[in-house]
Image 1 (cartoon, rainbow over the protein chains, first blue to last red):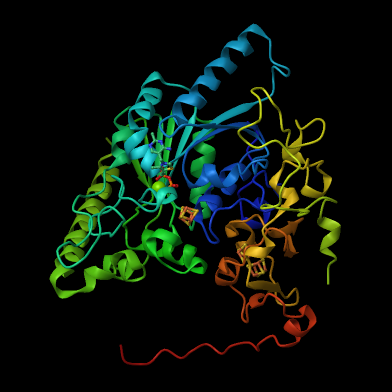
Image 2: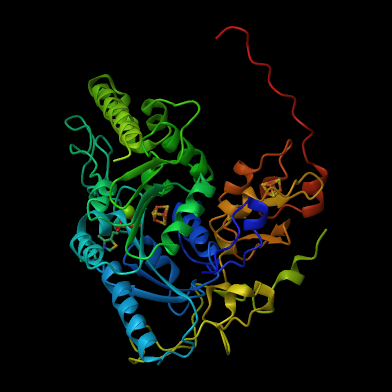
Length: 317
Length: 156
Ligand SMILES: Cc1ncc(C[n+]2csc(CCOP(=O)(O)OP(=O)(O)O)c2C)c(N)n1
Ligand code: SF4
Ligand code: SF4
Ligand code: SF4
Ligand SMILES: [Mg+2]
């Protein structure tokens, strides 16, 4: 496949963007940073599906498209279903020799929000992974249903206030913990599963290229800070992403063939969960004395998770 | 100063997203209708720069979101080290880089989020925000001096 050079940013920047401006994502939205990076990782033809969510509604505003590639919009549940259907059709037509250009390399990519990935499209994603299609699924994880006004999803962390888990005098926000989607996808035995973040552009580009090159179903969860619902200034999107990876709220790692775990980023100075949370309005209430124990609870979870990831990496099993 | 118009396709940023189009409503379009995003053959798009492409009026490249901005980033070529941080993190594909050089900002698509300013590593920054209506030459003339590193206090 025609991967592009990601040796350094200068070389990466010689790519010709295939994701155009004048989409209507909020200023500073990380979704488009992630999409641009994926599309600049390869010169191959792409067939992209995006289901309902911020990315889809903002990049196909009738009569415009922001995608310089084949693109399918499909219902909320079905980013994986649509693109794997296209993948099968392509395979069959290639075999029959009925494609316009039978040798043109094509990659199949699905984008879903966390609402669609962790919750509403979960069954269909699982099915597509199990069927073993040659595609890459990228979840844009902003930890809420952003497009419909910031409802909680099973990706929302404990303690965050959302429009359906409102913090107040009697509530510290969401009561349940975040679902571990990366482990669940790895448990499908997928050849490549990873969690990546746009502030670490190189490991993200490497992971995207690895997924595109790998035959079979690949899954990548990407941290996508949402200034509107996480409540921070749009200019700080990359700064907040730094806090998310350096506090290990979002550890960066990959899992090969369902078991071989590699940590891709080890922060030199690990910061506290408290520092990460204090930069976002959605956690503001946790700094009241009666809710502070939630911050401690999350810190313990994060510490345990980091220890577990390191043990799994060391064990090489 | 680079003439950034040179990097623009003739039809960049011509239409307002909100503009009333001389088109069927989205719910009147019949099945099988095609709104091609490029004129003619689009199979080589990945290898063409924006100014070499034949965008159709249905590609958002030909639309503008300039009216979203109240402040705008101004670029100072004299300080820039072409690190391309601004290019990789601009969410609106609005940093015009060619041949590893940062040349300027695509004001048709920039929303003024200020991310590029935040990630610019030079001292002083090579990108700074100014009022949307600020004059370019005046903005450049008012550029701040290099900042001295703040001394860290001895005590922790
Ligand atoms: C079956 C179904 N249920 C609900 C909706 C309404 N809906 C549209 S977008 C959306 C939220 C999307 O959230 P997420 O997938 O996390 O993407 P984000 O907007 O956060 O990027 C919802 C609930 C829908 N379109 N279809
Ligand atoms: S609501 Fe959040 S995810 Fe949606 S466009 Fe705005 S910043 Fe992006
Ligand atoms: S202000 Fe935002 S949209 Fe404009 S060039 Fe900078 S990063 Fe891009
Ligand atoms: S981030 Fe600053 S120094 Fe780097 S290319 Fe952009 S303007 Fe130049
Ligand atoms: Mg979401």
